[in-house]
Image 1 (spheres, one colour):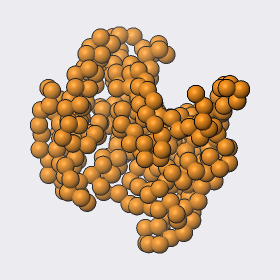
Image 2: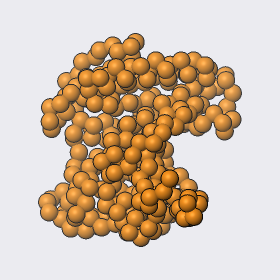
Image 3: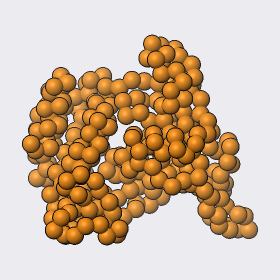
Image 4: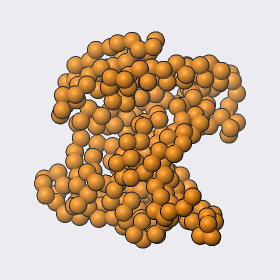
Length: 284
């Protein structure tokens, strides 16, 4: 079954009306959000490139499609074939959240505390699209108080994880600047935590006292508006990454790792990342 048909069947099975339109030779699903009734665009991407050159060309055409969609609508939810197949339950939950079908928690009813690497690793491998990445600091957000039935059911549960790198140090105008990378943030995929990212960030800043924090917004997921709302500034654009994909398991890995041969792999080039930075100490 084509990816667009599979996603459409899932949505219609959950009561959403769908229509398809073609944008720059890409089939896009149009539907309405459950809560606000606003238009939502979903861009299914088949993974079919047999060479890196084909994947590059497809990526450029897809970027044109995304730009066209964004002229009149919010950033589309991009669902690639490999994600849909290899992280099926997470992607279904993310799709429903995109359509405003999610539970809500409030950061004011939660507490943030350090957690062990093993706990962060298990949570991120299950709930983050790229899984766990090496880092120095691991924080978890837990439901502490309940103001409704749903929150009562989650009391004491780990709702979200944020991780940060160790310091990278450099000298600016005779000052030693300690810069950290916010490497991962993920909540349960069917949950929206109002103020969640902000509370994680404030806890890290209060404990570690960084001079500078940077992070990346993967353009396969979003433009990074959440970072802007937290006071980060868009600084740069990170180059796209070429992935090779095993068509049996649908697992992806960067091509610079040298996995597989052209005969047994498919290829996908993502859309790069927006680099954001939050300066907490003035320097040039």
